Length: 138
Image (tube, rainbow, N blue to C red; front, side, top):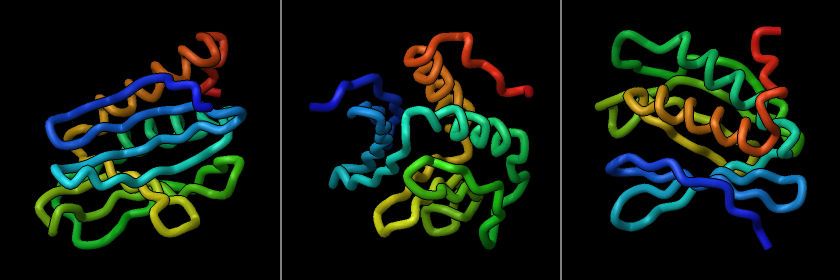
């Protein structure tokens, strides 16, 4: 049985964070058809994802992208996660893509929503581990 931690929502998207054992699942649901995508990482590696979100926010594109721009690779403890900016929604906007190693392992967070999403993930990390885990600047 999974321990539920929280949900982040916009008008079009929701991301649910669930903990089961030593795993954290981030599951994104989009649109009327409720299409779901997810990534799974070890809970001890959630801080790595937080750091990559901060790096991505610091390197936001200032124009509509034609192709992907890599931000980094994160050790998720269950495989590597590739973090990149890319064109999204038929080239109408940009999104931060968090990609796992298998088909269906991908979260897309639209550029306009990244700040809110990053704050939410940081808050979930603090709620799980406590503020003594904040070593992002080291």
